[in-house]
Image (cartoon, rainbow, N blue to C red; front, side):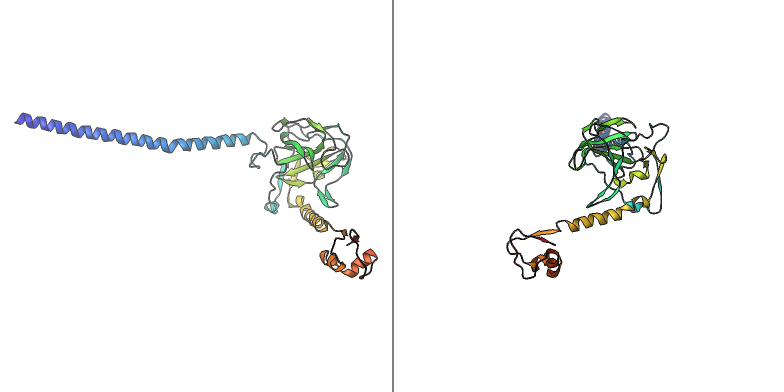
Length: 300
């Protein structure tokens, strides 16, 4: 009897030990599965972020620009008001760089500023088609393509946040992503895009906002005014004048002459162009009772 009872006790203890061992394995297995499920996606995301960060660091001014856009010519413009009363000093070159090299030693034919119905955001330098055009500073090619307005255009981004533009080229001699140094030939001058006669259109921009190149470069002496440039709100005083110039251009678009169509009357034409019948008659040497002919041109 005692022997049977002892056997019963041993079997019971064995079953309890087996149950505990089985539950322990089950919990361990579940924990392992949970750990795998939770940690693997996180590790991948972290790796992707590191790859993205590493890829941006390889481009100039990665701390200022959040992207490396090789399709749009202009980078997104920063808010000028964010400067407030502060100044930002830009180092144009240092001992480790190749310094500055004038893009082309030619005569300035058009300056930065208002130009008839549009604002001119660069400086035009006279040259002949086929003349070599050089990079002004060390940098990396962000844009190298053909544009309707700029023609064949190259945009170089530099380590200080500046970007320089070289437009109306007859030939592009560099590729996107290529490292260039001051003095390297990047293309040949030409007359492509919206251009009248061979010349180099040269621009300087900071985070998308144009800067008058003559504030940085002496085009008479083909050299920099200084190895540093101070950026402040006064740098962009031209913006309001440019906006007025553009608004005036849009407001005057289509004005000047009205071609008479079927059903037109002097009073209707006067209302359309916000003037008076008397004013139209004085400009055109006609009377209020004059008969209008189809195709007749009326000064407005």
